[in-house]
Image 1 (cartoon, rainbow, N blue to C red):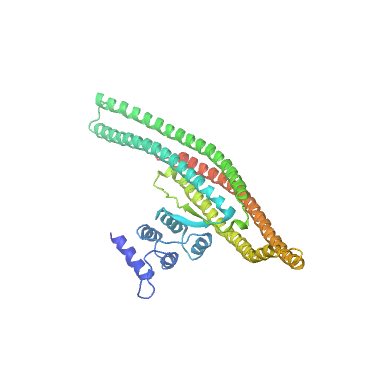
Image 2: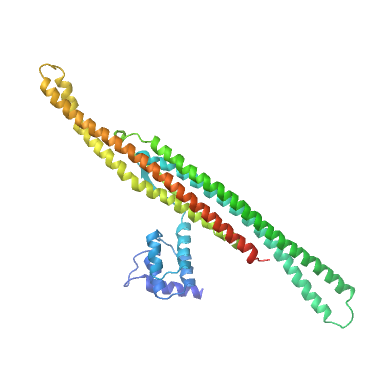
Amino acid sequence: MKRTISILITAWLLWIPGSAQTSAALTNSDVVKLAKAAVADELIVEFIQSTPVQFDLSREATSGLSGSGVSARVVEAMREAEISRGAGSKETRALGYVAALKLFIPYYEKNVKELQDKIRGWDTDIRRSLLEASELDSRIKNLEAELRLKKSEDPEKFSKDILALKKSLEEDRVNYRKMREKMLSAGEEITKDLSGWGSDKAKELGKEYGNVGEQVKDLNQGPDAGEMPMALSFPRFAINESVVFYMKPVTELYYWHQNALNRIVELAETWNPRVRDLVQKDASLADELKPLLKQAEALNADPKKNKNEISVVRKKINELEKKRKELAGRMEDDSKELASALEDEGGKLQEALEERFSDITANITYAFKEQPQL
């Protein structure tokens, strides 16, 4: 309680410029103020965990935090708080061929759900083993204490009771060693499963980006289709890091998937203006074309008499139609460019995902072999 009060008082003094509080949620600038005031990381983390937050954790903002003296530990706490503060969603709209990016939403949702199930299964098994080991360790310690007490009572040879206790102790110690070996074996199975699963996921990801790229090209209907925005809701995945420490490295994949999906949002917001620009230009040309078409229709009532006028109007119509055709060609080229960008993105992410799985596998292997809790 004292520590919480200390945090709140410190934050209150530093968070409020002048005398008035300007925001109900903790922001990047508030965390920077706390860091520059030399408030301990532990206190800042606790404050973040107990306070509403609204952080900007883009690459640029994160770099700015580090440059301002905010530690990696605090930035990690900020990321956890920001993502877990509400599984909400990022809303945007997609125009034309950009709408094909919606296919990434169920893809990443499926992958995160599969990740959750795997982590839950591994975590449950490990916790069960640790509980059994803890119970056995407690029994061993009780036996050791009881034996020390009995052996200190007299100088005679070991009694039958002592010998029986020694036998039980040796059996429990053997079982404990077996349990540790079983735990190491379980760790090897997990890393083996993780390695194979990661390889499959990386290949699947590359194919998915290629498939969506083909959908992008297929969805190109040209600027004459008009501006028909599709509402897209990109999820913010709820991240649970409350797992046994052996499994902590795997939770990094939650952030990886969220960041990869956020890149899709950025793509949509980057390419929408290009579609909108072509649609608007085409609509403007179509407006210019309408009266000319009507005029041509009226003149064609007496083509001989209106021969010269028809020629002039037809020339203007052809020029406008040529411009509209050029716009359609540009949109087709743009859709191909986005498809190509997706293919490149998929290749880069595939390599990155393989790297992540390799790193996670190595860290879990280290945890089981070098930091056993048994």
